[in-house]
Image (tube, rainbow, N blue to C red; front, side):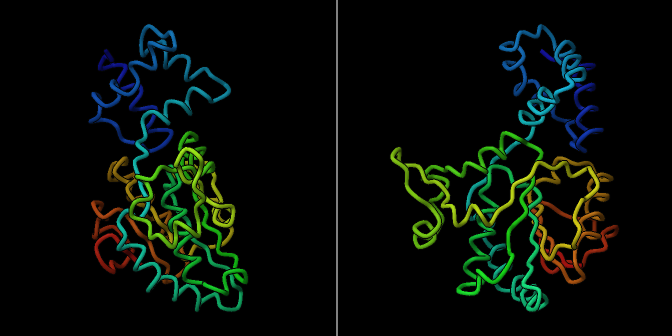
Length: 267
């Protein structure tokens, strides 16, 4: 069982490195790490963290983050966002970039890939026959290497795709021999997956038109969240859109964003 001191040590480590606030999640932390420690041969959380902090390869730290960040998502989650994206945000961005044909969309919490692939499907559908003229690849980032590996492989079971329209399922997925579905190459090429820590400086050379940052700020305390929202604001084109999770909120007194509707904001 994790001690209070060990819990504070791990919570502080995650807060300083990744902005993740686990200060109220001792039971969750213990539950997710206890068996991993036993199987790995560590006799205490202290011994484990000593090894994490001394591991120059960074592999133990990556595993720690993988275990403590939830990656529960599915296709069509919070679908109202995708409708707004297709009907409002994309027409605005396409008009703005009709000469450059350069559409910049970032999914900042890519998890196991469902959300960025969904964004790419909506873009494909929106651009239609003109899709080949555009650079409309979606940048998809996450701190979990485990989740990103799943996303890059692009294999999902029937349950994950149950809400996807049949026409999209036929167009963008190939059924495998074990009754799973794999994302077709045509769609895989439209998503660029990268490991990225949201606490680091944003490396973008050009400003984004749309940012999806859904269901990730629940991990951050108010000051960290405020700082992150400001960074997102700065990385957006004037008039650009931010989508957050439907159960999330932004502090209306501190955010420079204009609220279009709950969970959809505009610069």
